[in-house]
Length: 113
Image (cartoon, rainbow, N blue to C red; front, side, top):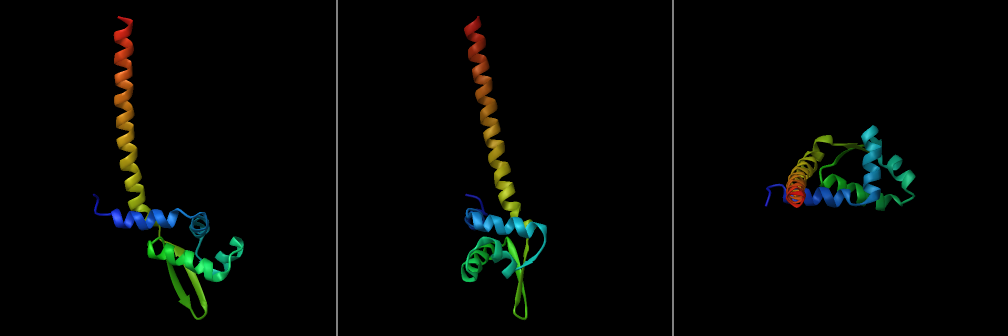
């Protein structure tokens, strides 16, 4: 098992929800106040706060409170473990498909002989 399994679980859990992905897409443009993030979702503020808590626990966002205003920002480096894991999986499957292609080509060549 990888040393990042727990981190990956938190990250994938956070990314699994479409509302949270929508929030991340919005934050990728610029930091935003919680009320601005809640508005397009149609969800009540406590529900949005729970989504933000999941994102913050996974390390995908950071929040800063100034008086009564809480502002959220994306943490781009937090996506690195996901990117690395996906790259590893891509390499594994590309190697498997290359071996399958070589096998099929060998079988076809033998069949033609």
